[in-house]
Image (tube, rainbow, N blue to C red; front, side, top):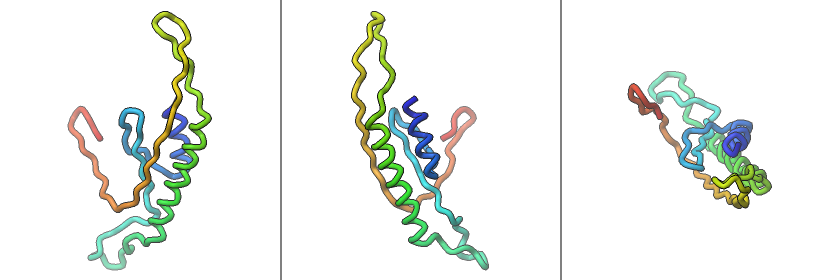
Length: 114
């Protein structure tokens, strides 16, 4: 339920979930313009600062929305092994936003892909 809520917010705001790490997620916002080789005639120039700024703005807005939404989130009640309801833990959310160019690839073998 927790990840479903987060994923919906991220995807609705143009982000792509790249990796789960425990209760954390790593999200990227793709740029609108694809980069091509500078040696290719009539190639699209590398992304402009404006495109990068729009991605950063989307990330910041999504982070703000996640904090607002999850502040009022109540996880389901927990049952202990004695079938007694346990107090629901309080959730806190920490968000970090970074802007940088990166290359994305796939690391895989026959049994696993990341």
